[in-house]
Amino acid sequence: MIKKQNFHPTILCLSTLALLPFWVVCETSTSAIQADAVVGAALYHKAKQRKRTNFKELEIIKMIDGKYGMFDGKSVLESYQLLFKLQTIQYGEQDRTTGKRVGLYQLDEKKATLQDLVIEEQRLIKEKVAKDDMRWKKLNAALTAAKDDFNDKLRQLRKAQDDNEMIKNMKHKLIAFFLKDQGRETSLMANADHPDEKKRMYEASALEFFTFLNDLKHFIEDMVDSCPEAHKQYKELLQKPH
Image 1 (tube, one colour):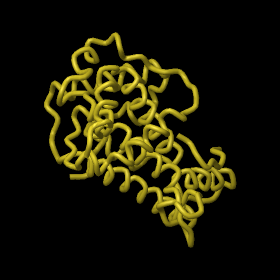
Image 2 (tube, helix red, strand yellow; image 1 turned 90 degrees about the vertical axis):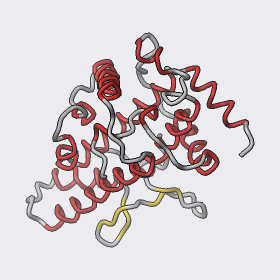
Image 3 (cartoon, helix red, strand yellow; image 1 turned 60 degrees about the horizontal axis):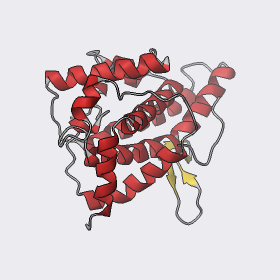
């Protein structure tokens, strides 16, 4: 069971996730997304210590690091923005007045975070509540809303644009390398090259979906760590007037 925490670091299917911003086309101005990116960077640096995946020796990384339109300074900025968005799905938005995190999804008479949904799901399982019980129906409705929100947030980060075969191949190799290195071959991220990946995501439990978002965050964090030239460009980008 996941314990409560105050702080933790076209509909798109998983193969068009914007897992790497070098295939994200973001129309929002840099200044408009800078605030979210700064918060995302803070979450990234406050993340718990864990085993990191080092992509630096891969030829793919050498091809894209710091390259305009591939993985450059703006890509790092967008990566931090995505980390911030994933955080709000899992743990809610922070109320500026109270400092407390507020969920985005309706469950009974209250707003729930994805973390709350995982806790409720585990409670229903422990109590062996029948799947046709209204409590399951309410939980599943809230979980579907969270998954829809995930897709909507990704849609905001890119145009509806199909990846070419080269990009798909690069993406799948990076995902496979990450999952093998992390011992996460059963993650929903492993479905990125499956034609029914969207269906699989919507069939996933709250815990599976929550874990997938963790995997995705770690993947993004490790990609940023593995692209020093892009990160250097990101720091230079923040110093420019907007």
